[in-house]
Length: 146
Image (cartoon, helix red, strand yellow):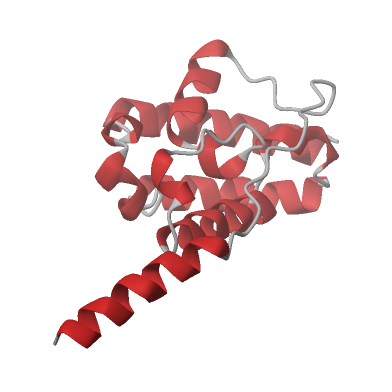
């Protein structure tokens, strides 16, 4: 039993040296999202950690193997939708992402429940969900007209 505990400790220490990059690329305000202030506030509170280049990296994102999962989630979130590159997203893709944002926000898939365990302030109220839905629908109209 002592050997198992010792080896577990050794492995936990060793994996701390496997460090994927936590990045926050510079944000070019010319291509970033400029939404109405109420929408911007909601998105920054509940979405930006994974869907922008403005991630606030929590302390546990420094501890393997948790860090690997957090960094992977952020990278996947940025690939799916990155508000820091909003105007560079082609309208066809933006349309798909906006429709998905409406669906995933409405049905409680976003923000991720695992994120909400620790970030209680990111929980969206019914009113905030409705505001995001209304904003997404107005953005969809802009995509159609362009």
